[in-house]
Image (cartoon, rainbow, N blue to C red):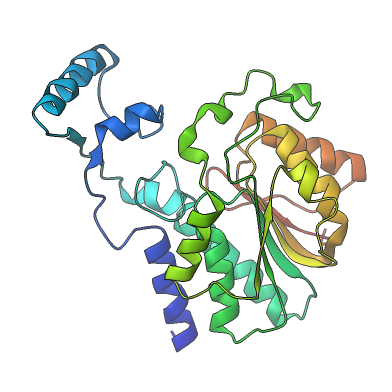
Length: 285
């Protein structure tokens, strides 16, 4: 690998925390954020009460209960869990996909900037900016679009397809703009080539100062969030550019993709990235 490729390789490993063994996770944190199931802890449901009681008793003497969760290689590669320490939860294969798509549009001179809609701690966008840094690209932007307060309650955008969705209840998914900016800064990548679009997609994206995109990465989980992005931004995606869908296995997101593609007659093949995500190249059949 050349120097640029080595830099990007180490960035992917740092952002995904795959260089290190996952340290112990405070049980109280998992409980407060409703993450006992999302963290995939091997605690039988009937024993959770005993574990909670143990945590309560330890807190009385100034101690904290922590649990061990060390994901296997498949989970790390595929982003199949919600990490406690990593800056991204998308896994190495999806980071590889971002690199592939960005290198393709740069090498083929496909015009447009880069955006992720739904950024969590910002890791995928930090990596986008790292790709531009690695290749000395100074005339393209990375847009970081998020509410920075979690996901919206279902049906707030008028879409009934999200009825019953509970993702808005996970405080773990709400990461502040200041926190995301701090992470960019810590990697030395917070500069004028990064722009933040703060708010619900339905409010920010229709008037966003974006003229052309070459990579559009969707990570909004829900039907409404996915459809809001596509209706506002897909027309700005250059032919030959890429549309990446992080949450294709989630029912609401998948239905939005199917409905939108059908409405425009999009027949570009959906290419799997890992068990959870897909992408397609605009204008390629």
